[in-house]
Amino acid sequence: MITLNNNFHLLPESYLFSIVRQRLDAYRQNHPEDEIIRMDIGDVTRPIAPAAVAAMHAAVDELARTESFHGYGPEQGYLFLREAIADYDYRRLGIAITPDEIFISDGAKSDLGNLGELFSHRARVAVPDPGYPVYADDNIIDGRNRTDAPIIHLPLTPENHFVPPTPDRTPDLIYLCYPNNPTGASISRHDLSRWVDYARRVGAVIIYDSAYEAYIRDASLPHSIYEIEGAEEVAIEVRSFSKTGGFTGIRCGYTVVPHALKGCYADGTVAELHRLWMRRQSTKFNGASYISQRGAAALYTPEGRRQVEESIDYYMENARLLREGMAAAGYEAFGGENAPYVWVRTPDGMTSWEFFDHLLERYQLSSTPGAGFGTNGEGFVRLTAFNTRSNTLAALRRLRD
Image 1 (cartoon, one colour):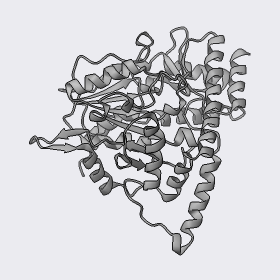
Image 2: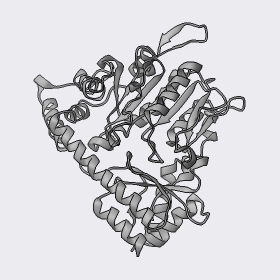
Image 3: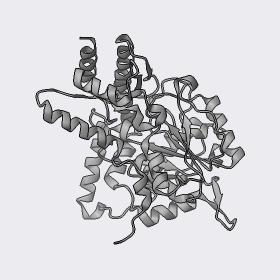
Image 4: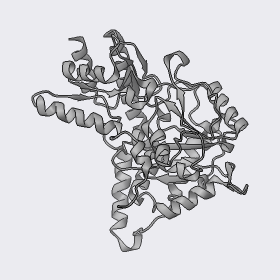
């Protein structure tokens, strides 16, 4: 029989959200009369922004005509979208990111899982704990969790305000996510500068997941790691249209790889990571669809921006209601102020999965157990604000009754 990649053998049997879904399915089979309010998976409930819908309809019409048909697109993405991103997400903030440094993808998750291919399997990796499971899982698959160099877990706790200290062991690759999934925490300019300075000092690369930056309400907080001086020499930034334009099912996001970011091969030859990522994408990716990219570009029009802001305001009001409602019900809650997630400490010494069962069986509310995000997630659950207002209010009423 063929030999398999043994690193898959080192992963948990199922992905976190698959386990949650399986447990919900089992509950439904035993309690078909119960209506479960989903507060677990971070999927949006509001429709796609109307400006994007109109643009995608127009794009479909273009593809239906010979004179305006588009086949294979550029692997890096269409220039009309990359220019819109550069103008609004970066130049507007005084950040000199060019369209050439932006790569359009089918979503942040894909890029976060694929960027590891740029780095040696001997690279030492640091991931936030708790953190989005893809960070650790991808590096385990790539063989970077070794006995001689195990993955470094950066503790995110209430005591450090969910912003970890720099580690004792020096990593080559660092994953950071702010606003944070799952804790809902944000990072100050001072603390982000500390991480950029650290990466420059030790020669590490930061993969910065800023998929939720549009949810930042505090004007003092940075929206991009490139607001920090020198970050273009040490950081890759990953973003998504899923939680802004409602693109969870459409699939479109982007990654910024600056030309200033460099690494070296085993023989000492220096290379731009931009060139390596271009080579990787050209080999393994045929580009996001023309339709989805036209829809994403429409989010940058005045009408599209207004619609995105309306959706974000809607979800952030849900987050406020959740945070305050959980506190009123006697639970200790974090986040929900600059992010659409509320991180709730379990009561009475319950484990994450015990509290998951408690919320499900007593209130018919589903959550995501914090233990699934890492060791430091034990004793917490994550609740999402990406539900309807009526379901959010109904969930809080159940907790009060």
